[in-house]
Length: 267
Image 1 (cartoon, rainbow, N blue to C red):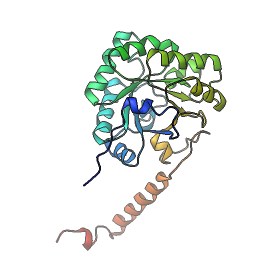
Image 2: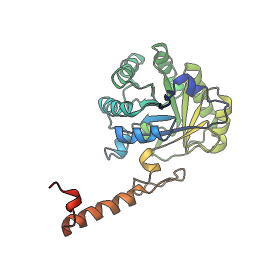
Image 3: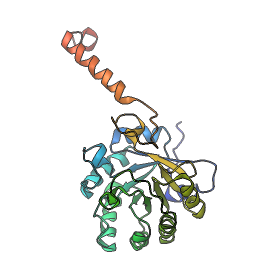
Image 4: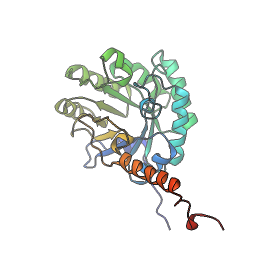
């Protein structure tokens, strides 16, 4: 008999603080990869608005829409048995008002079946976080390099070094009820001090080893993307090269007439 899989919930995720085991998170955007990541033991799957760049080919995360996030979120949730599924709130889906944020986050939870949403910001979004939590919608915050603020910050890869502002943002998000917080492109020592000052998990990306857990963009980690090699990215696979080899072999086999052969034809 197969052992039942214990679903990772928001309280269990939050309880990882202070434990010996680090949390793992990857982004996924469809049923196939979400299922692979979940079966491999990833703790959390983020349906990131990075799909605007990774899936849609845009240069920033700004163009992706709420309906598109819901569409991809549905696919991911259908594949997952154990991991905590978090869906990003896209640009301008929560910035107008708390009421707008609750309405749109409610759509995400209701229509995808996800466990939580994530939004960018700390102190500036504290009232929004508080409103969502009061509406029983779990929220993960995101500080440091905020991709949706790319126009204001002046680029996608800017290291954030303003320690007091980062600490204030992290504490404001925690006080507002966020169950976790992503720290992006923050020097390792500052990220360590932020983590030590909080009672909620920190998930680092380009923030060093002192965070409660780590997140990478799934296709980047697998080596599927070409030409994107920031300092924080470690490729644990080289699937683009393997895919290129397989496709070239298929093209050659068809052109040479060796595929389909007798073993792959109905008689």
